[in-house]
Image (tube, rainbow over all chains, first blue to last red; front, side):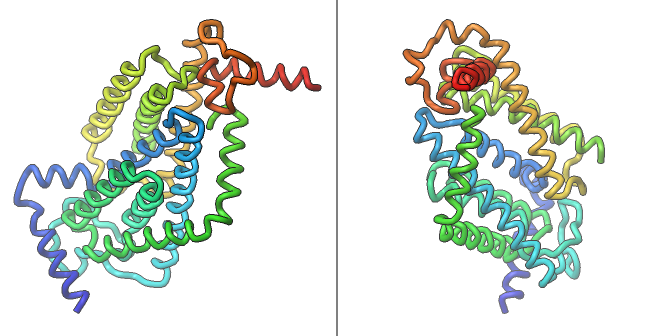
Amino acid sequence: MIADADTKLFEWINSLAGRNWLLDKFVMWTVNDYFIPILMTLLMVTLWFSGRSLPQRERNQRVFIRALTCMGIANGFVKISNDIFFRPRPYVGHAAHMLFYPPTDSSFPSNGAAVTFALATAVFISNRKLGSVLYFLCLVWGFARVTAGVHYPFDILGGWAFGTFTTLFVYYLLIYVEPWVTFIIRAFRKVYLA
Amino acid sequence: MINMTGDYVLYNFIACLSIIQAAVGYAGIRGLCFFKRPIFAYLFALVAVSASSAWFFTVKDRNLKGLEGTEQFTYWITAAGTALIATVILSSLINRRLKSQNPPTSEDSLGPGFETLKHMTYFQAVKRSLQKKRKQA
């Protein structure tokens, strides 16, 4: 039932590919492994340096370290999940319209969606404005991945769920994580890099 | 693959270097700025990020199998680290007269980390820190 709905939704979104030149160009620009991830990392770099006062900057830097931690853990969770469960990509068994090279690893959950959503959620908890921008980029990337025939919609939703769960898990354990965050910031501050 | 790695590192290096300028310009960390006025730092970031993105995404098809996630992370760290080192060296050379132009009101008024770099360059801050340690010893 869920798989059917997922397939139908995939077929509908994927059918948008090849119809409109502009949409195809937009999808091909945003679907790759570089454009949106690099944009997100650049926004994270600004977070480390920005903040006009010391407390404001320290708050940003804490968010930066927590978000990177969440990203790393989300990546680990997805790798474990891929070892246990394998879902073939949509082009296997469906006549998918591909706008991207055909990957061979497990389709569910989307690693990119999990990692970027973990990052966006970690930022959103402390910085609504930047977090919203990152969420928007996650949405664009997710849409592009389905339209390009790389993922089923539920792979993306699963990735988002993994990412959110990871961040909430890290924040639940914040009392244990925070001394490390403080240690890292102090170490960087000692060498005038924080 | 070597070409892809080189392109990726170069793109990230330029993007990080310019985005750091915009951020330090906004935060008023003058010791790390290449420009006296923040508006020039923002313009530099806008032009450099746009130009490097246009180059990276149009010179070759990036929708082919390229770098794995772990490789991307490693190369990104390399590029960002190099951009930071370049920022420190270039800004220290460009702003070598900053300390005399913008002295702190007192030694105690200097905050930690980046706060110090609002009044002096990175090299000046390191030199001051080493001198302080030598005096204490």
